[in-house]
Amino acid sequence: MNFIVVNTAIHWLTNSLKRAKVLQQLSREPREMPKTAPDQENDMPTLSEMDGVRCLHFNSPWIQGAMQVSNPAHLVFLYTRQMMSWLLFLQTSSVKRIDLLGLGAGSLARACLKLGKSEVHCVEWNPAVTAFCYQYFRLPKQNKRFSITHDDAQQWVANPAHHHRSEVLLVDLYDYTAQGPVADSLTFYQHCYQVLADYGVMVVNLFGHHPSYRKNLKNIQKAFHQRVLVLDETEDGNRIVLAFKGPLVQVSEEDFLQRARVIQRTTELEGVEMATMLLPQLKANQLSKKASLLIV
Image (cartoon, rainbow, N blue to C red; front, side, top):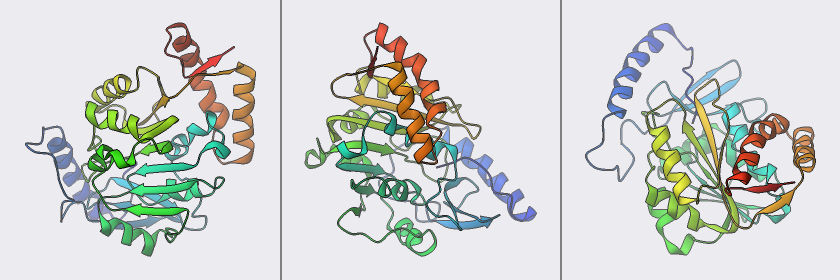
């Protein structure tokens, strides 16, 4: 999800911002019990549209996903393009399955379906969101390559039947408060590690300047044995984290940057910018034996 407020009608925006402040305050207070089902009022999808961009909301001004009406395959927000940074580390031909936790407006699902022949599977706990995406966000129909399971992502990753199956796991789990992931425990991320095959990459969307950020990053680092990279925070507050499983791959710095240039030339992704952000961390991690790639 993204954290921009839509500039719609003044009266709607004023009332929505007041509500957002209340939700933001509530989100900082610990829940007595974890949510076990979508909130029947606040987690229900709503719609806004401006300047050719259609946005998904959950009964608040916070944007949960977006689609450019004239080009549905375009990833509107920078953070969604950064969530595709796993392409810097994995060849699409080696990726048999991609799992997404959280459907949003279907942007990442559409982007992944454009790549190679990977099976793309999404876990979305709210059937109303799926129906909304079919109606308003041109979500592809389910077929042999694309499927959706309606389930709680925390329960889904805990199920051993889903372990050791995916090369890519994309995690973007927010509710109507949009202030921190609804799943953030060490146990959750340990289960995410198990979902990945013998080698793989998990990519998580965090809210950089929210108090939940440090807790999530710490739990991801522990679950993935410190093999973690972090992209710079976007203007909208998103912070993308990559976590790795599997053997180290030896690659030269020039080959890594050349791969980034190919990605940038053949996709809409800022491949070179992302690679440049990550290179210092890759080199530092190598020295501390936390490498994701062995840069030579």
